[in-house]
Length: 284
Image 1: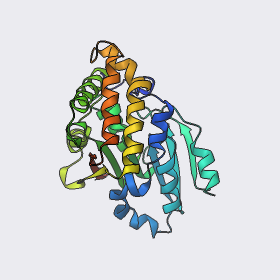
Image 2 (image 1 turned 180 degrees about the horizontal axis):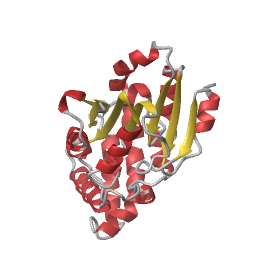
Image 3 (image 1 turned 60 degrees about the vertical axis):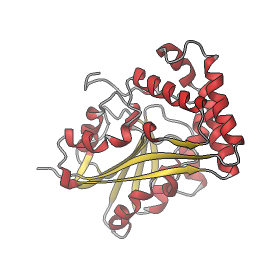
Image 4 (image 1 turned 30 degrees about the horizontal axis):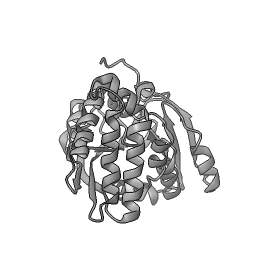
C-alpha cells in the first residue's frame, strides 16, 4: 500500500449490513470515548470558538454526543461512505452545532490548522496499514496545541469464557481476513508507534486502554447474536472466503454457532480491549 492510496471504504471488512450498523449505533461518548472526556474540559469551559472533527463517524451517535457535550463547539462528522443516520439523529436531539459530510481521511477537504479536536473510533484499524498517510492528514488539519484522540480494538486480546474451539476459530479467521484486506487487527497496541512514525514526540502522547465487557444475559444476547449474524451476513463472510481464511462460506456457520453457544452459557463472559491515544499536536 502506498501513502497516496485512498481510504479503503469500499472494501471495509464488515460493510454496512444492518447488523454492523446496529452495533455502531450503540456506541456513545460514555461507553466508547470516556478516556477523551478529561481532555475536553478546557474546551467545555472556554468561550473561544472551537472546531471538532469526528473522522469515521458512522451513524453519528458519538458525534452527536460530542456536540451535546461541547455546545459551543462546531462539530463536523465525516465518513468515506456517509450513512443517512447522522443528520436526523442530530435534529431529533435539537443539536445545531453539528454537520455531516462525505470525505476521505487520506485527502481531507479542509485547510491546514482547521480543528482544535480530532476524534476517531475504530477507524485506523480498517485503513491500509500502517495508516501513516491518514495520520499525517489528521496532523495537517489539526491546530497547533490541539489534540487528536483515537481508540482502536486489539483482536489479539479478545478474551472469553467458556473456552470454545468455534470462537478460537472465529478469531483465526477474522485476523487472517483482516490482514488479507490490508488492515490491522492489532491496531490497539500500535497507536503510539504509528503516531511517532509520523513525527509526534513521545512526550506529547498519552496512552490508555479500556474494555467493553459482556456478561449479563441481555449483554450476551445482543453482542453474541449480533456477531453471529455479522459472521454470516456482513461483507466479512464473502471476504473470508475470498481471502482463503475459510474454504467455503458454509464453514462460517460453525464459527457463528460458537457465538450462539456463548449466548446460551449462563457463565458466558467476554472482554473486548481497545488501545487509546491522545496526542497533543505541536508544530514548529
